[in-house]
Every structure is written in structure tokens, then in C-alpha cells.
Length: 264
Image (cartoon, rainbow, N blue to C red):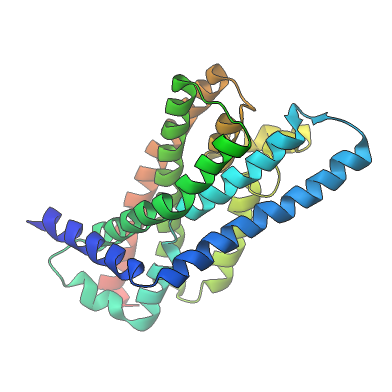
């Protein structure tokens, strides 16, 4: 019975977003602008350096990489700001008294947004890349890419939960959310491919979970890493999933105890 309610909630969110078609157009436009700007920047870098490849990236691969990043950013859900809004407005109390789980209500909403943005923005960008950038994906590479996107979405959702739960203790975490978004973009490879970073920084990012939120799927799609390297990397990603699940459970347990003890 509860599962059906979560499904209905997801359907309602999708219908609401379909009602505002101009928002969909603007979202697509904003997602395309960022990689176009990066294309101009990296074109200038390649022309100034006089080289055809930088760390195994051709200019076409770099351009493709940032368009994939745009598609992935469009798919990624934004949960922490919603949790902060519920805490600030006091709606969290009424929500927690409902028979439905607050966590799974948020997850069902995230699923609806992921599905909507993937179909309307993510997939069209990837299809255009295959057609115009001549990206060729083998069946095994496509499967690894799909798996990496799944790992990315799960890690992103849990990271958003972990950051959002901090609002139960401090409430005004808007600045923290902005900083965390910047850190995740940088350490995730959203601003520069991680293999282009200095060796010391690259060694650190290679063991952190942020690489799976953007860099790993983009690197697989562009062919910057081999299938063997991708498989080895995704094993680490799955391990991070297990760690984040434990962290999320612990933080949610602490947040609920904090509400019961002193309120928000």
C-alpha cells in the first residue's frame, strides 16, 4: 500500500513538471551553455599549446567530456536544499507524523526528477554526442557506462541526504550547501578532468567517492579509460556505496533523536 503511495507521489511530481514546459526548455538551455563555454576555453588552450592531445584527451574528447558532464549534472537530484526548506519552514514536523517514511518520500521525489531530467535533458545530450561527435560505444562499454551512472545517482542521493541532515542540527546551512556543491564539482571532475590534475591531487581524488559522481561515467563514455580500468574503478565505487549507506542510516538516526530531544 505504501509503495503505491510513493509511486503516486512520483507521478504527481512528473505531471507538475510537465505542466511547466518553459522550465524544461530553460533547463536544457542552461545545461548546454556550460559545456559550450568550456569548449571555447579548451579550444584556446589546445591552440596555444600547439598539441593535439593532453593526457590522452583530444580536443574532441574534451568537448565530449564536458557535454557528458552537463548531461550527468542534469540527471543528478538536488535533495539537500529540499531538506533544508522542510526544516526551516517547520514542515518537517507534520511530514514526520504522516504514515509514510520521510526518507522514502524524498527518494521517490528524487526518482521522479531523475527520470524526468534524464529523458528530457540527459538522454538527448548523449544521443547528440553519439551522432555528431561520432562516439562509438560497444555493448560492454555502454553497460559499464549505465552501471557507472547508477552508482553516480546512488552516491549523489546519499551525499545530498548526508549534507541535508546537517540542517537538523544547524538550520542555516545555505553557505555550506554552496561550498559542498563547489567541492563535489571540483573533486568530481566537473570543472576539469581528474587525470589532468597534478599527480599528488589526482592520487587523492582516485580514492575518494566524488570521482564516481561525474568523472568516472564521463571518462567511460569518452573512452578516456579502458573497460578494465572502469571495472576496477567501479568496484571501489560499490564499496563507497556500502559506506555511505551506513553513514546515511547513522545520520538519520541521530537527526530523529535530535528532533525528539530538543526539536528543530
